[in-house]
Length: 292
Image (tube, rainbow, N blue to C red; front, side):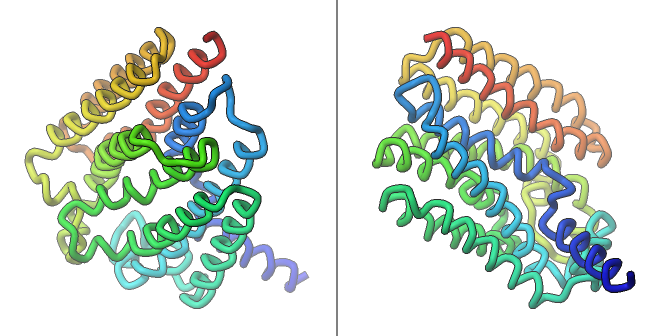
């Protein structure tokens, strides 16, 4: 009985380490990957095998990234109210276990893409580097959220490579749109921890932007939607796609109402609500593809 309880407790700690209990990060990775798959595909949907490979790979790599992030921040998380109970900071999981788990998850993700073309395999190397190095950028980059946007969005060029065996300019424009989106939503997230981050010396966009944080977030949302609109125009997308962008724009305005007074709880609510912004863009893209 004790062995079973110990095993269950260990599995629970691993689950919380890789944030399977908090799917928002996975969703923020999935939406831009899905945008790319649908934009790149000639039909109304991508090949189902490719779709499943990218879906499962995204879940695995986000989980691996969480383990690496907590390993990198193991000496900081205990000093931040929101993160002090994370398994690594609380001593439920050792640093070696976190690294081993990240390695296993990354290997599984790599095995998933083996059936795909060589270009996808080549792009997986910078994708792995970005995922592993992002947590350390908070020590020296003024806006590490921009680096996060590249790391979170690298499924975009990989998706184009899987479908078209090339990475056209559109893929890099979409990646840039994702960078602006990541700066927007992760600045909202960073506004929650701003006081703690100032004490421990972590650098974030919320600190760098200072009193211009809300303005910077709204500019980033505008750039995201503007770049996606250009992509829709370039790809001759129809009314449903632009309707999805309009819904996303309304959601961004709602986020302004949430964050304008910089209340931590409302900033965190805005961060979580970005799932619906990404979903709105995808819904418009999907309907447009189905009815073309």
